[in-house]
Length: 280
Length: 257
Image 1 (tube, rainbow over the protein chains, first blue to last red):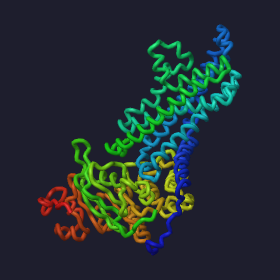
Image 2 (spheres, rainbow over the protein chains, first blue to last red; image 1 turned 30 degrees about the vertical axis):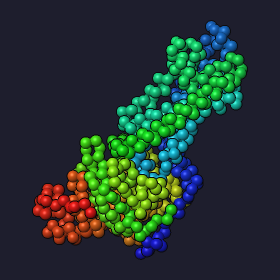
Image 3 (cartoon, helix red, strand yellow; image 1 turned 90 degrees about the vertical axis):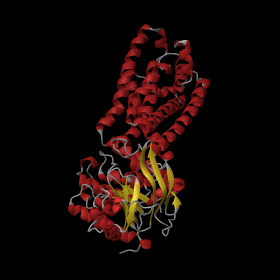
């Protein structure tokens, strides 16, 4: 028998490399899951593509009856594609989190050396990957069927994408925190929350279209500014820096609050002992 | 991080956990020497799982402290976790991932530099080489337990917490697992801390027993001492005495250490 001090321990990485390895481990876990499940792959492609077909045909019809839509080629398609960025980011993050609950695996994860900030980073990475895959497929449908390329937005597309993804992650973290705190009764919010925001975010119409008191709420939401900026790009071919700045500032505020909220809810779950019972 | 192997592996002081009106664990204190094997016994609802969950950090104590290898777990949690692992029927692994994929994820979470090598070694040790490509969800209960144990050993932990380690295993496999745990402890100097309802298992594996009843530790000692103290032939009879408050246990409630 080998003595304790001479045991052959598996070698481990340390420091930043170990941290990145833990984040990539969680990303790998979801890659394995998606790669081995065709319904999950289909889910990433199906809904964005259906959305694009719906709004693409609507755009085509409206272009024949309205000068505005004829002038602003792709305004509806662009809005549909970008809205999906927000929706997919939020749902992607929440589903990635819920997969651990559904598989009753969260206990293993939280007892491993994975730190909460690393777990958070892995959720963002996986959500971003899911969103980009969905966006790429939907954009391809838009390009092939309606000859609309989202890349025509140019470099500002990156800012639009990041702002929408960030607000999606904010909402996703809120839902994940609520599930930790209140249990799986809160998981239906994963799909409902983003949809509930749609009328307020001025996705397909200007903020000015909304009733006066709703406009204040709309202006407090980052996506409203993103979509105002997108319409300016389409109709006026100008980049609205004020819209981008407003969206970024609001996102910084909300995202920080959501991160704090997630950590507080995790602490509350530890105090209430709900981690072991989640998924049962 | 260098672990002080001379310090107790676990030192729990006045640990209490209340869930509202429910007092799950009440003023529990004990020390588990490094390299030892200790069992936490008690009936259903006695507070064993909550105690283990607090040691693992899944549940936050209401009051009290937990020191692992002489370090405060509440303060140095992420420096200590690479040295710990656990297996429990209360948690599962992703069912759609294969056994190899599951173990690969955990090997990377624990920062192993050669994960494939370690997985292959554990697959040989636990005799599931033929299951590496199978989805975890398709395994039998016994096969899942073996894979769960392999996951618990993936980082060669210095402190291994086990909740019902041989539940759902047939007698032959259960005996084999006990032998493996005995060998692992002897070869590595690791500390075992387990909750079990299998008294024969506890007598074989453990050199210290903590008896819980109604959220408190009511007795403790090496198995041989407990047998002598209660005048019984085996731990099962001692367990029943304590659970049913018979004989010595009728009035026994140990004073706080």
